[in-house]
Image (cartoon, rainbow, N blue to C red; front, side, top):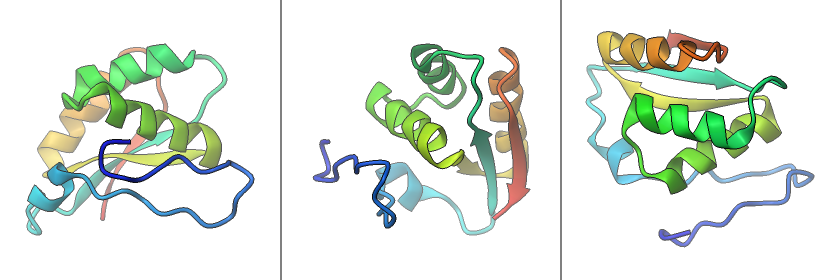
Amino acid sequence: MADGTELLDPAQEERLRPVWDEDLDADLDDPYVVILYNDDYHDMEEVMEQIQRATGYDIERCMHIMLEAHTLGRAITYTGSESECERVARILRQIRLQVETDRF
């Protein structure tokens, strides 16, 4: 990966979450997250494309989020204000992905 992190074997217990530039820009007054849950109904490419459509992230980051949800059962997909998170969740739900927003 571009920032020096690498994907770990799913059997490995401990994982490090990579720090992305956008994470550092998140305002502390906006402690909401969108959580994406794994499902068996969508293929991986379809999930990555929908994450990209909802968040505007590059495809590499979308792949990481999708793989985290796939291997761990869920992944924080987006961090921001409550209204931004609801917008992202609405777009993800357009193809019936299971997501929720919550206070961080």
